[in-house]
Length: 353
Ligand SMILES: NC(=O)c1ccc[n+]([C@@H]2O[C@H](COP(=O)([O-])OP(=O)(O)OC[C@H]3O[C@@H](n4cnc5c(N)ncnc54)[C@H](OP(=O)(O)O)[C@@H]3O)[C@@H](O)[C@H]2O)c1
Image (tube, rainbow, N blue to C red; front, side):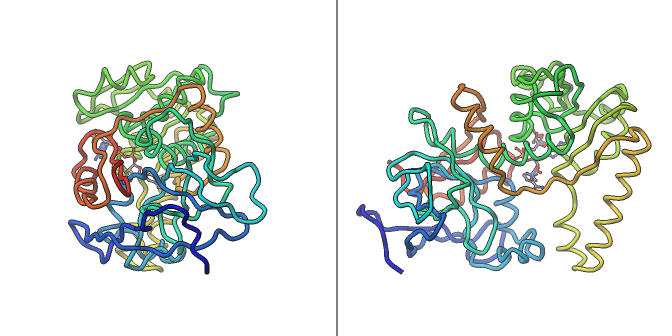
């Protein structure tokens, strides 16, 4: 394969060498290939560390993600990227060399976005605003896409959300804040559940009402919600479902035990247990809201979500606070930031400018 670099940077990648806590990380040189049909080579300005990266670095999800070829170490993690197009493969339309783009790398055999140069399917890239700092963009695609999948599976859309009552658990986390920003724009009436001290932030992000987490706080809410989005805790899923109203549309959770069950109990028992966990919660939802859907959201790249994100960015919407912004050779600090649940997202740059 031919190298296509036309700058003087040596291509590098951040490798997670083996599962461990703290993560075992190393920066290595990487080989860059010509983009094949439908692919684009992006020179990465910034990428991010999401909670899933921190957990995968410790070995989480190895069995199930192994089905996609993403379970064995050494592993290049990361799903988000913002950068500049360096080369386009045959049959790529609408993307040009030197264009600034934002996008997603799916979780798979080819490895993730923690690299200086990444090959990305053209369909998973959208134009990035020229004036916005790379850090502000790099923390959005994965979280926005997962939030979008949860919102859509709860049957919420721009056409129907106005006036609907939506309960968001984890409202000041990354997915929660993006859900507040999107759904308040759509006219939904949102109640956010957040950590103590975060009420004002939750209201500022778009919640009509916000409650700070305390024992029994979910049970104290009226059973009046048209949709529930659980971005915080599987242990709270049943309590949240009990707050759905009879006509509710749906309940989606991103914090289900699917990967952990397979990791802990193996394929067969893990699958049986997951089926039982899902079905048990489905019954709780149905008991309160007979017509509501119940979904375990699993991230996967989605072109419509990226297009909605790009449109929002053009209109000056969608942002998450940044906690740390570090070069690859200080990636351990970024992972530690995420693992310890400190406020703000974690940005990584192959090299600092
Ligand atoms: N299934 C998937 O494909 C998928 C994809 C993306 C994300 N996720 C998961 O979805 C969740 C949300 O993602 P994120 O990026 O928004 O994470 P995040 O930024 O870390 O936010 C998590 C939120 O949940 C709250 N929380 C954490 N543990 C809690 C507990 N035991 N009880 C109540 N609240 C709790 C946190 O509150 P504090 O302010 O107190 O920390 C925070 O507001 C994460 O667990 C993530 O791993 C799953």
